[in-house]
Every structure is written in C-alpha cells, then in structure tokens.
Length: 158
Image 1 (cartoon, rainbow, N blue to C red):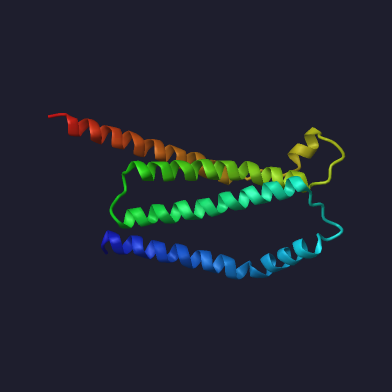
Image 2 (cartoon, rainbow, N blue to C red):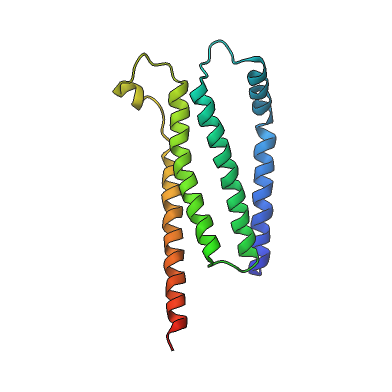
C-alpha cells in the first residue's frame, strides 16, 4: 500500500475516532451543559478557579487536535521533515505536558479539603501518561530538528 494511502487511512481513522468520542460522550456533555446553565448540583464544588482550569484545558485540547490534524496533513503532502512540523510536534509536546498539570489543578480545585496538606496534594490523581507523552513528543521534535540540521550540513558539504 502506498504511503499516501496509509496516511489517508490514518486521517480517516482519526476523524472517525473523534466522531465516536463525541457521540459516546454526548449525553455527558449535554448534562454538563445543562448543569452549567442551571447551576451546578448542590453536592459538587465548582469554583472560579475550576472554571479557569477547564477553559484553558479545553482550548489546549482543541489546539492539540488541530496541530495533530495539520501534522497528518503535511505528512500526506510528503512534507515530513520541515521546520513547521518540528514546531507542531514540539507544540504538541508542550500542550500535552501542560494539560497534565491543568487537569491536576482542575481536580485539586474541585476537591474539598480543609487546608493545604500533604495528604490533600497526594489524594488528587496526576495524569502521568500525558506528561510522558508530552516529553516523548518533545524528544521526537528534538530528533527531527537534529535531522534537519544534519541534512542542511550535508547539503553544504561538497
């Protein structure tokens, strides 16, 4: 199978997975929207700080989806090792790493603790997989950058 066809199938699978994720979580999104419209449930704590974490996390999540789609598009156009793709991969890495800390802040701001203690900090889950994925993407971006530098150096050598 040609590479362009494989990338096209990856792009279709990516869009299909996004549609499935939205379809399966539509009821949760709908109930969350109505909770926000009518006020939160009395047994849940939702502060201004939680809203800020949620808003920034949503914007970063949308940016991750857009950057990934643009990266897949550039691969389909046979423009893999470019400066733009290095920026996209590095941005994806930073976004994923930042998202892990934003999720921690969101969960921590929603928790009900009487004070800032060691137990209250440890009791909230930290999304390590996002941090590891972000560092991995930053490493890949660094390798791409070194590859482009070596390619430019080779082109200058006669």
